[in-house]
Length: 76
Image (cartoon, rainbow, N blue to C red; front, side, top):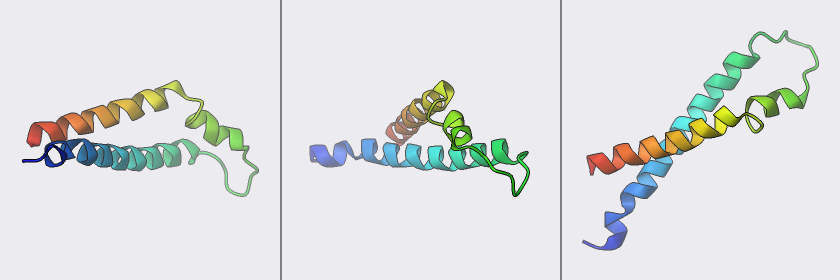
């Protein structure tokens, strides 16, 4: 078995992690922005403060990738 096939769990885990994080991010952002009334001006800083500037957002990003890689590695 070649090393590429042996290390394929890394790619599978990263893809699974990115997918889970993307779906989770969409759900999180929709739920946080739902109370905002329609047809009102909203600053772009709101979206940035929910994501890029939020430390917990990045902690969950790393944790999701780590957990997904661990799950895929355990299954192979």
